[in-house]
Length: 362
Image (cartoon, rainbow, N blue to C red; front, side, top):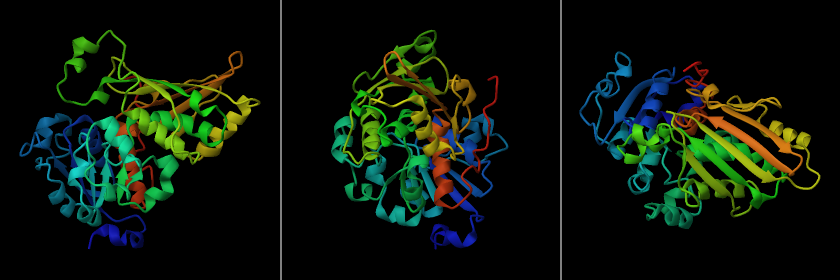
């Protein structure tokens, strides 16, 4: 019997085996880095299509004497039989075709890709230009934004881990939308990300000489995280969808995301109401830091951590809300949130393996 089946009887102190498929990518290696420090993880299995048979510490020498496992083939079915939880760090279009009900029954699946993030599969198929492989399984999936969907995550066996841009954007906008403080379709999100968000694959646009000493927009009007943000914010007000303008930019730094939000506040809404809304939703959240008025988020203070820093103000002249969020795209935007989801599902303390404060300077 899989340990998940009777986990509640252990009071959150039992040990588990975890698997990471796609462990040699940036998000996958960040998962491994966090998991080796998790007190309840007894074994980590690493899977990789490109590096099967190679020692993990030969691929990432920073794991020398910390993880001596050899990479297994990226066999989702075989790995699920050996694990209590399986993390999938794969390109879109793979998970929905390879994850089965049998796998979900055997272990908890936490997918860092986009395949199970959308309730509306027509939206997913339109924006990702691919057919979803398992609509019935998709109905079981829970969107794994911990601070908003915690209660649903607790009882889920298939978790769709949000993307980095979407985590930064939704967390920053959610209190405004849910408390009806802004004109919903006035929301503009300007986001800037470090290059690791593009993955570890060899791409011309990610080469050092292509990104250094430059700042560029991309995916203008058609970035795939746009409908994900719209759907989740729409769910906050029981509306099928709201419309946003989302523009991402590539910044010549390794990691980190800074988003700037602009929205028209509703008549009569003042800064105190906005502060109350953020406190209502986040004051008890250990991984969200609400900054004092006059302080604004910076990526250097969240780098390497699972924190999201939020700051905001109102431009009284234009009656616009201006908000900011900063997070590490590989931690809270990917691997850290995935571990946070695992902790919630298995009844562990949520901060396990995620206690790190961002080193500074770095």
